[in-house]
Length: 185
Image 1: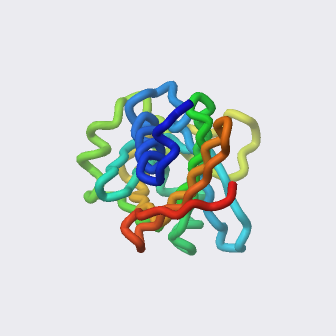
Image 2: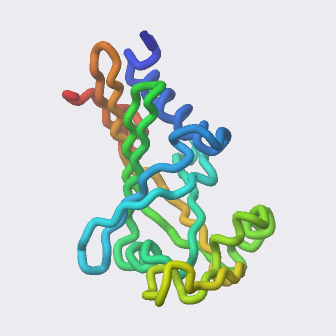
């Protein structure tokens, strides 16, 4: 039994430990959360992303993406997203609601310079992501800092569910300084 999840502060700490581990451990399930946005036509869109940075004190996460991806168009229309993480070892579900700012160009050049060469292959493809092609491999990868973007996600709420022997659920909000409130699971 994880005694830590018995208190609001402990459960919140467990959430952040999980999220941080997604950046530090490439095999951790928090490494690739489901990232949901709303399309310009108001349809939900969910995809896996790679968690690249976490700042617990600022309650922010960062994700890298191609500037021409569908998620960029969606975030330009509605700058909100949700992330979902399921950590089976902790029996912990984490849902983050976030406000997202898109950074690109000179604002992210220092980050681009630190991206490993094999990862740069994900940022720059012709035709752009989501465009029709004649066959499965009818595209060319052209890594370019001009197509690299960082999504700076300011966490607004955290909904945490621990599915241990006794289920617990809590909601935390930036607006009340992460005080937390228990919810029925």
